[in-house]
Length: 141
Image (cartoon, rainbow, N blue to C red; front, side, top):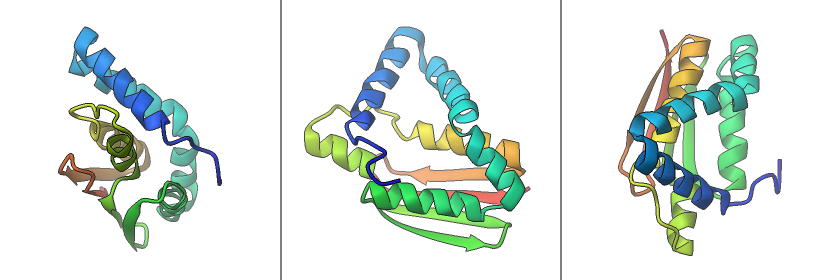
């Protein structure tokens, strides 16, 4: 998985969200993210359905380690998983490089997790502060 990402992608994504919001409204951003969740994360949804939350834990560990985020993951079997991020690598990178951060940049995690949860039988909750800290939780319905 190493070198799979380029951190400036987050800046481009932020600009894209801003464009959609400004020209088409917040609903367009949300609809875009729902489509992204189903198409880009379809493989992860299948893995979670087949093998459980250990697949989401593995994915989160790989992504946040590669991007040098500060995070902890707690999982209770296939009943619940909690990702606590102390330093979001995307927001940290954009601020460090001087990119404008879309005012609701974290909506992507909220919507993507909701879709993943909906497709795999979990409720999704997220609390974030827009400064790069959040807690994401999926709990069995």
